[in-house]
Image (cartoon, rainbow, N blue to C red):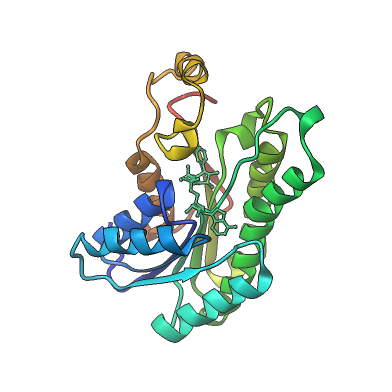
Length: 248
Ligand SMILES: NC(=O)c1ccc[n+]([C@@H]2O[C@H](COP(=O)([O-])OP(=O)(O)OC[C@H]3O[C@@H](n4cnc5c(N)ncnc54)[C@H](O)[C@@H]3O)[C@@H](O)[C@H]2O)c1
């Protein structure tokens, strides 16, 4: 897919799927802007990306997506640096898993404010410029557990179900401005997030995946890039599931 000259913003790109997306967009000609909360891992990610020796520019900034002022500052700096934003990928997220009875109000608020409010805040900041340009594209990362629920993940599942509602509403609101907004719902992907699951739990999950494997990060990147590309020009408000058949 050709993203030559396109300016692509990816939140939470210091590792995992976000870093994989950063690699994929760079490899397809884009200039990228990435953020994460830890300056150290962000600096490491930048080194990893630079080592690919691809021509695209790499802008990095430490940002907490749950802060409106930090989102606005990040987007304003990208506009100063690149002059435009073509694609925004709202990827940053955290988990704070536990059974509801043990779930603290703080754990609920933290997950909702990063995963759902973060996507709202970053979209709002970027859409201001996309509206002026009458062009733009947002891809939100949701999850299979936002579609089917998961015991022990009430906060995370609610945040990811919320992302689907946000995606549908923004798609309706901004279609007349030539801005498309879609979501990708991964199943279980080989990342640090899933590596943290107990071996027993990983086995149980695999038994329920018809394709009998966890997704590679590249499986997710392919769907994100498709939605962000002109090939998906007539698709908006949709959620593409990339889950090996776990939820059909
Ligand atoms: N890994 C999976 O199996 C899986 C499955 C379904 C959906 N997803 C979704 O895909 C996305 C990426 O998942 P991952 O496994 O790569 O996660 P990860 O934990 O490996 O990486 C998350 C990234 O988000 C950043 N981040 C966390 N809090 C932040 C904040 N407040 N502000 C800015 N950045 C912040 C982290 O620094 C990191 O770069 C998430 O939206 C996740 O919900 C992952």
